[in-house]
Length: 158
Image (cartoon, rainbow, N blue to C red; front, side, top):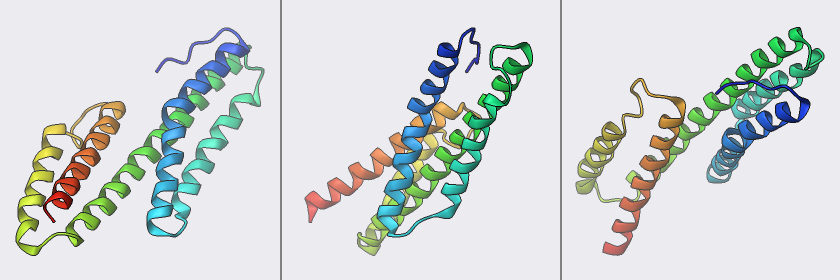
């Protein structure tokens, strides 16, 4: 993502784009995890705190000066990176929780087949390969959808 801007409004638009794409989803994931586990995970609060600290540092300088633009771009990049890493971490946690719930709800004889199906889908999506953050995020969403489809098929059988 490029962080080019020439006015305050353009900078605010960049921040809004980052928030719309990453912060909103990260916040939703954190709330989902907390609801599912019925507890608060401090690690995700720290991720948000660290991200916010970079967002605030954007305004350490006049954002339209040469030094201010360099600072803003640097801090925006760090803000974005914290949000992206937090999003990936929350997807990993949700995936682990959903997988455990699924495994706990099926018969022992079906577990290996389900594990294989999920592993095959994860491999197809190449979530752990050298792909962009956005592609990894989309891969996690598709993998969670796949687990949901498996759960729904199993519920229909029962």
